[in-house]
Image (cartoon, rainbow, N blue to C red; front, top):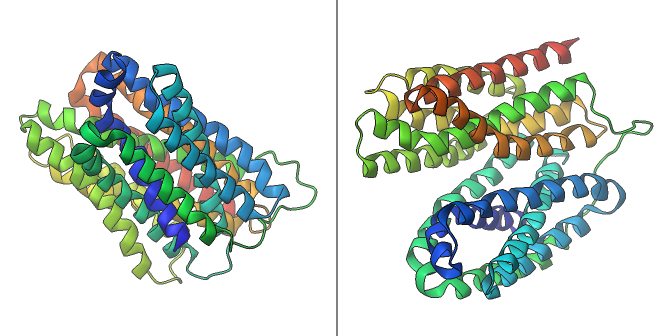
Length: 361
C-alpha cells in the first residue's frame, strides 16, 4: 500500500507544475517562460537523483534509499510551500525533483526484481496509480492553488512523511552480478534507445496533441478534453495489464504496443480520425514502460544495473523528446506532429525488435 501511495503522490506532484505556471508568475513576479523553467529544474534534479540511486541501492538495503528519497520529497514540498523568493523556490523544486528521481528508479527496480510471477502486472498497476495521480494533480491545483498554495504543498509533505513507516518494512537488496563493471552492454543500449523514444512519444504526444487538434479545426476545450483522454487511456491500459495472463511474454506485449502506436500516430494525420487515434495511442503505449523494465530484468536476472540504465534514459527522453519534436514542428508546422511522433514510434518498434532478436541469440 505504501508503494502504491507513493506512486500516486509522485504523479500528483509532477502533474501540478503545468497548471501552476500562471499562478507562479503572479506569486513571484516572473514571466511565463521563466516560470516554465520549473519543469526543467525538477527533471534536472530527478536525473541527478536517478544517477545517485543507481549506486546507492547496490550498496545499501533498498528501504534506506526509498526512505531517504521520500524524505527529500517531503522536505522539498515544505520548502516550496514557504519559499518567498524565486531562487529559493527553484532550489526547493530541485530538491523535490531529486527525491522524485530517486523514487522512480528505486520503486520500479524493487518490483522489477521481486520474485512474483506477475511482476509486469504489478508494475503496470503501480504506474497506473502514478498516471491516476497525474490526472488528479491538475484538478487539485485548479481548485486550491490560488488561495491555498502553501497548504496544498504542506499537505503533500505530510502525505510523503506518512508513507515512510510503511516503506520501512521493505526488505532486501537489488541483485548485482559479480565481476560486472556496471557499463551497459549492447542489449542494454538497445533498450536505452527504445526507452528514450518511448518517453519522447509519451511526453511529446501529451505536449503537442492539443495544438495539433486545434490546427485541424477542433475547439480548444474539446482538444484539451481529448488530451485528458490520452492520459486516462494510459491509466486504463496499465490497470488492464493486471488482467493479462502471466504466460504472455513481455516482449510480445511491448512489441505489439509499439507497432500499434506507430500505426495510430500515423492515422492521427487524418483530421477526422486524429482525436480518437491519439486516445487509442495512450492505450497502446500504456504497458510499454513497466513491462519493458520487467522484460529486461528477466533477460538479465542477476544484475539490476541493466535496468538501472533505463531510468536516466527516461529522464533524457522527457527533457529532449518534446524539445526535439518542437524543433521539427517549428520548421514544418504543427500539422506534421503526428508524422514526427509516428517516426519516433517506428524507431522505438525497431529498437525493441532488435532487442528481441539479440536476446534470442
